[in-house]
Length: 300
Image (cartoon, helix red, strand yellow):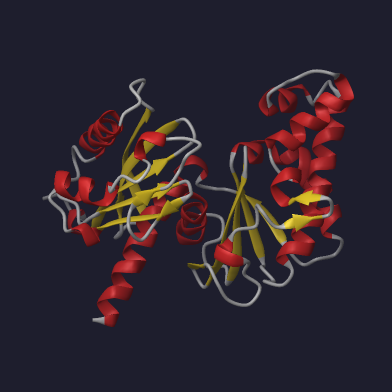
């Protein structure tokens, strides 16, 4: 047995187009070997499970045995039962008992296979070992095709309490004449760019053109202003000290952060790009697993 193995769990990040896996070592707070794969072309539960199992074999090659598994999953998903209720993607998992299938394959007690929301996993990762480590009150925000959020107090993600919206989610909160997600997602940037130029472009392409494209520069500045204004209104009741930004749009933070601070209009809030980036949900899944394990031990 390698050093630290007795404090390791297998973590997964089930993303928009691919699945990644790694072993999280609680003693160091770091990930071991990283493995990633796109979704299978065969749209079936069995094919999806085989991807998970193959990634586990790759990630745990030098790190077996593991204490458990922790999966960052998009919603809607029953994170307690381990059952997906997604109809818009991964439809072959709808109603499937993923917890028991994984527990059986890995020879684990079902209680040792745990699930959490992918945005909450991002927040857990950044407060556990990223840009919000040692911050008393922090919020993790993922900016992409949607907007995910996770609220944290003293290094633990919370889904209720003063200033925390229901479930810790802000995407569906009303803001002006739309919702938060309508104004702070890839479609907001794409739609605004299309209105100005008549061109349909990916956000990454718009960002890359900014040095020579004044419209792209203007669109990102407008996005940043909306971001700051939204944070001032939506997050003020929670009074975070730091917001960590992740997701695809955050890779172009230099284009919108100055305008975002203007939108904050004097609110004492620091906006920090993610340190862990794509690995944040994997680290967060591990941090969350051990936090839950410690809470269960303390309660017993």
